[in-house]
Image (tube, rainbow, N blue to C red):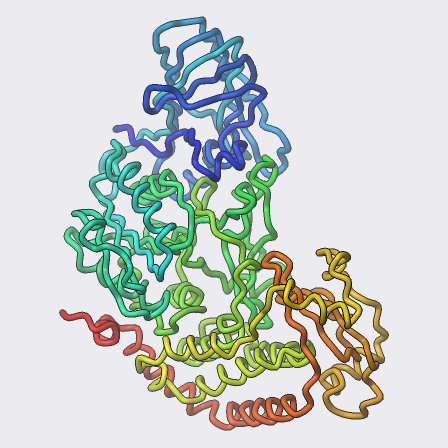
Length: 627
């Protein structure tokens, strides 16, 4: 038997932990980093509980995913008298619970005392950790969880990070510095088995200054996330030594190197059942660092991408345990679509065996490349607390070009090429999207839905040509342009909109509308067809600019729609346009008829082209790289 470190007990003053210190430790005292590297000082008497998102040990997951069965914790302590006791939590827990028989009393000492204990674990325990009760100041160092394993069960792992970036230098440079200082220069096992491939779609990074034997900058044409990740996968396949796993990660994230270290350790001990599984990291919020926004997504029956669970708060122990215990409820009536699950590529580890077996991403530029790839490979999925990145929330960066043009086009391409979400109704999805944008008087975004359908109907030859960048740029150029609220104050005031009363609650709240009015609104596309008497002169509907679920009762019979983006302090004033509606509605219905008429032809064409468009040979030609 040999010892194998699994997870360092983390102490950090990085921005996310300063904003949410209970991700690391719940305490009645205070702590600070010690003068000696790798030490932490608890400066006051008190209780220090490590049953937290980052420092609890998810023992049930480690037992499930790996060949290890004996787990231990190691600490080195000096200072005032203190007691150590192991703690547990499960999905019922609101507070950590001490485990009987695990308490140790440590006397005052000016030399380092070692605690090395096997983790006690009952059948319902999800998380195991420990707490320290200190009578005065103490100092800790060299704290970690480890396993005792048969040496033959340790798998050789070469982990290759692939990040695709387009002019996000502030994020990328910070993350490269962290990788070099805390991973490649560390004494962790990963240090000699990690490569980072930074695919620079903007060609703005200094290749010579940033590259070394473990970090490579690859200047690339702007081929979007899909093309950048395809390039990263190719580089991982061809690096020396060849990668065993590719970690795909967004560029505009804040990382914790410890998440990557734990990823490597997990892969090194993964059991046969999960050897080809994907490993996903959770998306945490940059604005609210303890909020976990998504761990896994799925394709709903109505064709919309959704997250498995609502936002969870990782400063609350119950939510920490609940996330780690989460069970995909696809076996429940009405939940079968949740089996159409996927990991997004803000943090997703893919075994190279899967890439060699199933090929590279589809040439989508952005949107659905990650969803389709998960559904294509149909792997088992692994995730656990403490493996994550921090990302800006979606509502701060809505893009009509992505959500209306790319989503429409790519969903149909993926479905016709690979039947990636057989339970989803994508025709229903685009019908709903078109109706919603018309109802909201957002004709620009309704036009993007129409354009997405038009480009899908051009067939696979079109998407396989290098047109994706230009198509996305064109969609961005024609998307609705929001304006600063300060520029619209006079016009808003003339419409009776009082900016002093604009709040989230005011925007999101719905308005009572009779069934009759709602039915007429559906039939007439909110008064665009039929008698003009349906419209109430002077009615102004004030709604959220990008939310698709709230406030829809305010829209029927409106003459003007004011769409407000509170976080970015922008707005749009939309006026009814009968001519624009007639033109868009005619094009849309014509395209739906063409879709029905050419259904078999399109399925055959896309499915036959699918193997080529996901091949290494295709992508090398597409990217203009030799070999």
